Length: 249
Length: 248
Image 1 (tube, rainbow over the protein chains, first blue to last red):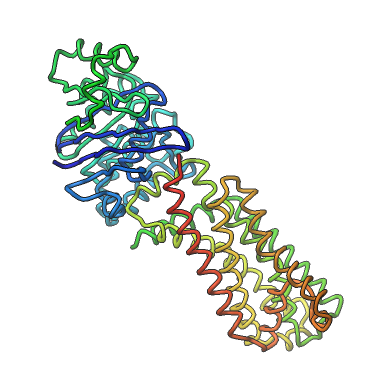
Image 2 (cartoon, chains in turn brown, yellow):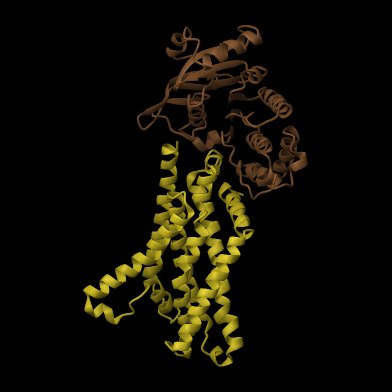
């Protein structure tokens, strides 16, 4: 098993943001994490990215805790945070070059990868433009290009389709699907139907607890979308007992 | 190139490409230049003490320059959220602090070296009679002393830029620690120990820089300032690690 999440608990003051979340992700899987606003999706992604330390529980990659060697883990991680923060004063190409070099790629390899990811994310037209002059959708694509520049083994995308029009969202989904061949991908979002195109499995969070896990092959797409939408909205209560026991695999 | 080196390059380029750098450096040069001219006019030092007057004049304004050049360092990253992407790249917290520190130090150093043109080029050219009194040795000793001081003020500024998300608050705290606290300590010491008041009451770092540029270079302050700078950088690294745990 490539990526294991074990009984994660994370609190902010008296509020429990994550409460005993457990699941595994195998290479080649694309796991979609769903949930209403405030359900704990972003906190989960930050913990998986080893940016936030959990109060208890662990995140393991290839049998080793990611918190034990964070720098080593970051070398194989691609992460797109929810707010998609970028350096506004830099040009897109310079920003991606900087991020590639920061990730330990050599000068030539960085130049090659910048070409690859700008093409893959549809950024060729804006590669010389300052990041601060881009639309929200283009910024998100720059963030995605940054996340995939070092060909990560673990790809965490927090709401990657937010602010994208239908065509670009579809293009990004295809890019993510291509990447999933060699990476474990975990992404969050609200567009259940769109995510159903690429996700092999879905997890639904509610108030920090994992309440539902569904494989995309469990039923046809429309039934799956309907079922997940009901779970996110809190209408499917019969599934709570399944996930509340943890170890949803 | 190391990750810290890559970060140093980016930070330095961003700093030198910003209008703020040129404005703050111009203000620093104007202020330190005005102090030097004022000291020369008052005839505080004779003709042989030009390097000492220069070092003392510059030393007082260095905390302002470093506060301005460091206030954006982490504060801007916190405010924009880029700290999250920076800290999830394969670079350790100490490398992040090192890269930021080196870049801010370079920015301060460029201002300091420009200020050094006053006694080395401008004064001898404008006032040839002063040229004989401006020896290279004392000037270099003063410059080295000022660089050590700059390292400490930069480390303090980096620390507060991480502690505060607001740039103005970071700069204010940095100035308070670098300027107000030493002045207050000096004033209190002078009040409690009458003999001490015979010494120069003022900004201690300026006195030390002036001494060094007069040929009274002492090793102890260099070690103290160096250790203090290292201590602040270490604290910044600890704070950065702790912030990861507390960030929500």
